Length: 242
Length: 242
Image 1 (cartoon, rainbow over the protein chains, first blue to last red):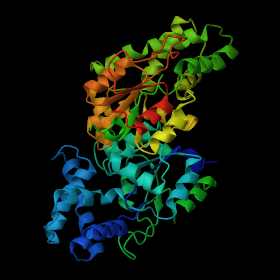
Image 2: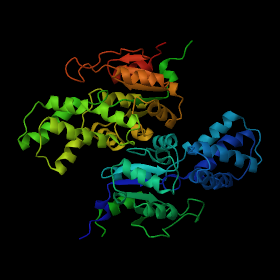
Image 3: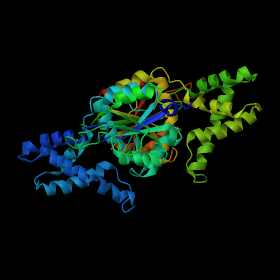
Image 4: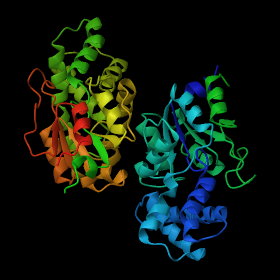
């Protein structure tokens, strides 16, 4: 008899932006709270989307070695300058730009996340395996009550997903073989890369992550388990599923 | 008026072995629990001291670049072989050696540590800045209820204290200037190195760490604050002390 997935894995590592927290709604809210009182009026969700659209190209500079590793806060700040220009927002002093950039530290978790992690923590070691930096992860954890054992991911590995070293360094930090670690994400490309690095994979449906119906309601790649949310994932790992 | 130390710092990072946990009593207990039933009889505290005596020389191999970074569990295992030989313990199979090496993951905290960290966490970001690896820190945190925001220190920096990069990478992960971080330790040499790296420093008295009267009851170097234990440290940081 095959060991169940729940018995094979010893640690769970998580994508964060989109999988655990609603970056789009939160960034729109934070930008509006900061800029509307200064007389700026625009489509706040479009502002969030535009900022996020700069995310992959900025990390690609690091992945390819064109620039040395820089934490995501630094890349977000550089991207913010691009987006402010695109939206023709000029009169924003340095302190306000710093503050606006920290909007990424004030994202709200989806409602299943804190109770789901609490259940999963009884059986598994838990860490984010995000491209977000340590301080960003710490602020999201404190804001949303995420009970991490450690903060792993890009800053720990000094490179960005989907590079294999990011997933593998998280497994190694937990004294696990890659196959003993379950990567949890709402993005099929992240899970495909984790699987190539040797990890087990779990897909979480976040169908509205990028706007209504514009997230993934299911995986488009083979995964070890797919669940509606973290509570269903906890159920599935608790049960013998093979 | 000068800002008080409690207002100047934003994060606290901690030495762990000796400062937060009783390595000597715990290793003696774990070694006895494992080896006595196998007919081994020896001075268990002397065994703990002998194992710990190998600690600095092993890390020096990494600090000087003679060997690549290896996590402390690996160095502890290598040191265990030396100590078993010194105590003429031969009949111990591989599984038992692995298990005995994990004794370092089962150390008990001093009684003030969990309540002290709980109070300090209300105001500051907290992380270990230990030479112990991530999984070791995670196990000690779960065992003793240590509410870390992140696990920083040697494995994060990929080098060992007292190298400056270990202290400075912890500050950087928390988005702090070194002077905004308070290094807390029961060892004056650790605090002297942290101060050279730019951090503020707090000494905690652990007079019996290495046996009765063989720990530090006070700092032998200049520090920003010295306290009996973490509860007194919390009092001191809460108050305006300049």
